[in-house]
Image (cartoon, rainbow, N blue to C red; front, side, top):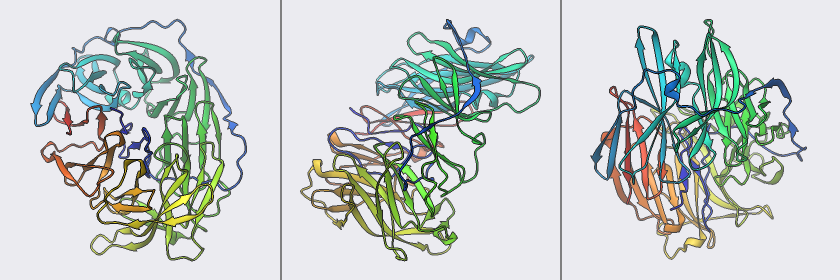
Length: 536
């Protein structure tokens, strides 16, 4: 079974991927949620980021090693498995789950688990890779990093899974002690051999009371040669695994800023970054090549940018000017009263612009994109304040439209209450954020592009899993802690599949595997608990 949605981040949003003959429409993004991009002027060729003059040290003729040999003292990771309704649970004794990533085979989930202890010689900490799948009765683990004599937070903040080189090996960043120094590395780990191999020494940090830098994000490029690392020392930089060459892509990006926007598309190696909310001085960068530029600075108004769900283009919602009243703040987020949508290719080159007249009481934003038909789903709305006591800003939908990328024309869609006779080949899915004061502000629509009709979902949920080849849609209802099953062709028919209130998960992301298996975890005093559920 092909996976349509994977959760690749510890943040709240998921990636929607198009599979087969059906491309999905959706405004969900990976990484930092809403941010600031645009494209109006013809772009110039990407400028290569200037070399910082630094170079990571390539580990020549590296020896694979077992991490526990470097700092002994931790026993093997202990896990216990128990049966639960529609699945099973795994308790990681005295372990803290830091991250979960689905392996390329679609049947194995990989977790990074940290354990710490304090003894006569001080504190020490170890991170293990734990991998298992719902079809297997056993769980396997091996240490990938250890540190001693310093706060456990140092290794936690610096160990990141970057991506898989192949089905058995992944790349990760970490840190270790060497004398009085903390040394930051990029390593390769083999699930098959249970060994770690150092590839690059990034830099050294003197442990003399100064705060050790943390790694904020790290992702492997599609070329499997470059790794993007954002840390508190060098900011956003790209490293060449073969030569060690470092390109600092975005200046002054070492610290996370309030209102910043930061989005990565690991499947393409393209990212966007802006230090402030709704600003046009956004950086576009490609960490395959080290290219970086600011192609959208000519936009005179606010911009709010993202990548389409299938990662085929860049979009941004824009305003004619920068009047403060166009950005309405709520309890959870700020909503933009945008007047149009600009589309650009993945290099930042302008494609097509859709707009409403200046002074219109209506607003327009991106809702999704269909690459096969070169069609954009547009959401038309009005902004208003919700009733007391929340006073949240909400978007009131006035229309959904299809925009033709070739002609620039917009055609309204007709809403239907009972979708009947719909065919899978004509279907698409769209989603927008509508409520500034809610944790689940998504409006989801099912679009029949052939007859230009749409059905609006009656519930507000996060992270749908869409399987076009099975005509299946799985919805996760966070507030009610339930999973529902529906379909693309009959989205009005919904069946409750799972109630998981009693598990009280504290992480927000679902991770999906083949066979309709879902994985989540939550913290517990005696060791974090991992759950696998199968949704039939």
